[in-house]
Image 1 (cartoon, rainbow, N blue to C red):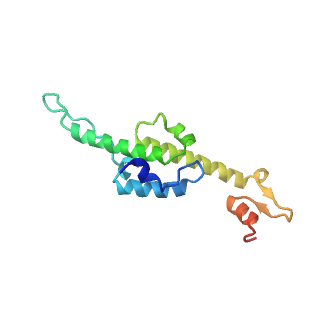
Image 2: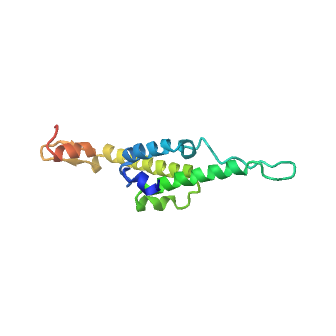
Image 3: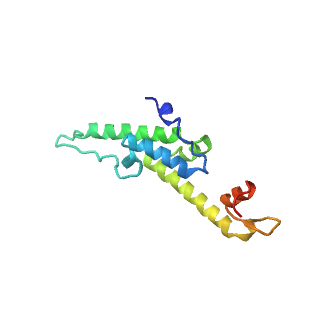
Length: 145
């Protein structure tokens, strides 16, 4: 099956939807037994040489590289172009995953800063403070007060 067809149901990561994207992407990685490559538990095997200095594990290394390339293709295919730019210098799926995760954590910390910073908060006419997207959604849609 083609990569694009397999990922068409996954919401593309746009910098704001990490939990939803991770859920869909992780299921795909599990389906193809790529999670350990992406999370770094399974690394490229070190080259082993016999007495004649011939590589004895070339097939194992090649298979790992094929799986890593597949994982990288899945990651790139499920990420918006703007976020892909941050991954250009990544050499493995694990590096990509770490970079995306770090970006998400930075965004989460910045969002937490905004929620905790009174100068970054909005107040309604009635004096109700809006500090999170959920508060804003509820306020705009007439939900719980």
